[in-house]
Image (tube, rainbow, N blue to C red; front, top):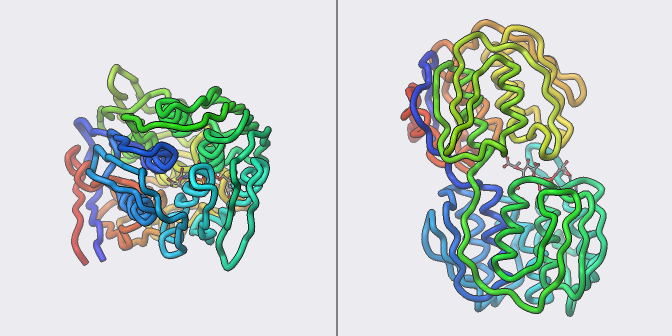
Length: 416
Ligand code: EPZ
């Protein structure tokens, strides 16, 4: 298995180009199930998770061509099943549930099972589909759903679930009548999906707020649309500049999508300057400790919590980091502590006492964002850090070591 080797101490300088968003690409590519014919999606990143969703869609009968610019034809959907061996590798596969029931009237999707950061049930997806009139049964670890035609309804999400909102928004596009999603997720990826659906002839309004209205239509048609930039990749690089020091222009990101992070990094003493086309990120002085609480968008993103913890571990004070979205998203703590970080976990909060320097060490990636936090720690650490199980990082970051090396980091991938 590959490893990533980092020798810390280099400042970061130059420009880094942000790729398309993983968490926008997945629902956008699945939305093609609603619109028979050739759709074209631009700015799709080359990631392991994108390969997985392509495999799943091909498994259903879709024809798929290209990388970066991806063309998908779902004219001949012949199967309505998402098998366990695919779903267990990527829980976002559950996104095919709503569109398959809406387009084909039936779907058999494996329950995803747990993952490193939490149980991550899909009960809210299932409940909402039942609210739209689907008959749903849980059998042999699969969700079996069917409906001659879904019927518009008012749906209230107990939690503003991102993929739950996306799943049901897609299902409601072909339902008979109007659907209201209340306490809907407001992430930019939800807005991106709504815009793509409207380009296909759907009638979705209110995306980006907590109430989304979908007026069902009879049929939808293919579209050409772009995926938004990856705000989590952009945030990861912004935090990296705080770790290593330097002056980097984060190109191709949407400053408004990383506003919560921008405010926090300014409080920590960094200079963050949005410009037309990206964000300039400068760290010249010692980083100050600040407190972080993760929340659904527009709050501070849980997907940047691990990276912020790495930064706070070398800040000059005490930082309290509270994770409110997932119940087990501190897997990076023990690895950071192997590098000398001084962290105490208490419930869903971590008390991080900043130290002058981390020490490079062999560390192990446990989940996608934890892996990113360990790379960041390696950039700031004294000596060599060796990160194993880098397949986690390849799920969500496109050539991360090449991007870091291009802005001055001493980082390389070795096949192990
Ligand atoms: C999406 O996951 C993202 N994944 C996650 O990114 C992200 O961390 C998360 O949203 C929160 O922002 C994709 O978009 C593909 P949720 P999702 O449903 O939709 C509970 C990454 O690193 N919940 O908003 O699965 C759930 O357990 C990944 O790129 C239920 O209880 O997250 C969690 O505690 C990690 N029942 C909370 O809601 C449900 O039916 C938020 O989960 C659904 C969710």
